[in-house]
Length: 352
Ligand SMILES: Nc1ncnc2c1ncn2[C@@H]1O[C@H](COP(=O)(O)OP(=O)(O)O)[C@@H](O)[C@H]1O
Ligand SMILES: [Mg+2]
Image 1 (spheres, rainbow, N blue to C red):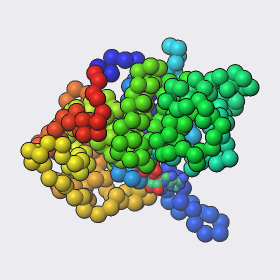
Image 2: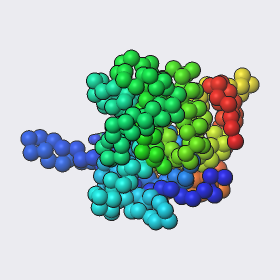
Image 3: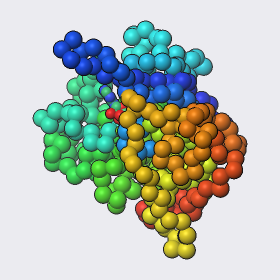
Image 4: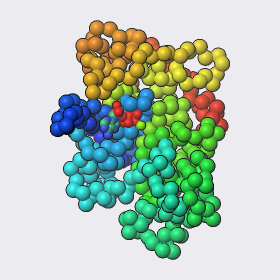
């Protein structure tokens, strides 16, 4: 369904290598391959969930897409008004325009902000920086934004510490909306919140999406959370995407052993479900020295010789379902009951 919508952003062959420098002369002795060949597409008004363990490269993908960090290799194309902007080639002046069409929501929006700024300053800052509003007009806009996210307008002159975690995240969302973006990168936006509050914030994000036809790249290490908001999900492991599919297909019929293992950790919503938790041996390997062949093979219980020797590429295994696994055709992996069940567990009503 979401594939019928126009493409908003397309990333191809994205790489980000961070140099590792040693000694007095800061000689480069190697590279952390944080993102190592990622392809992804985000359609207008859709949510693409990006999941994976900590250290898999999710935040770096988000930063590349926002052009908050330089791309080592690959292209990012942004579609607007029938034109295609190649973000890896545009001059800085055009990048400024792009920055108005995108924004970010962090796990803790205040860790990077001055605690002496009021809500008015925080939410109004993007409008001021871009020279869009000041004075009374700025106050009017901020008031509107606060109403949109369900905060009291009277609290405009308060400081962040006066708010609860959920309210602070609403302030972060109001700020992210200030420039009327078309794409928001939400990086673990509810991970720091209590489950009851998570549901409220996720519902708010969904309702804003419908009102403004917003697209989200929704980053989380938690597959249960991602299922509430995403139409499609991409699973990342050690710098690359190992599986991507519409949310129902990914959860009910995973085709990659890593996805299967992540799903097995979701608490059961149906006591009759028979699946049991798959414990992955070891930690996520060092991205400066990734394993040969399939990067997941040292932790994979199905691995064979070919997995140690050849790196699998992402290929289509069913309509709109792509996987990077040599054994995907023969493995019969265990998924979870429809994510709708999980949605109820979080008290979120399902729409559409
Ligand atoms: N600025 C940086 N310099 C060096 N290494 C980095 C930098 N940012 C991230 N990394 C490394 O890149 C890898 C991916 O990190 P990140 O994108 O934050 O993953 P995730 O968000 O999935 O936890 C990690 O090994 C991390 O240590
Ligand atoms: Mg991260």
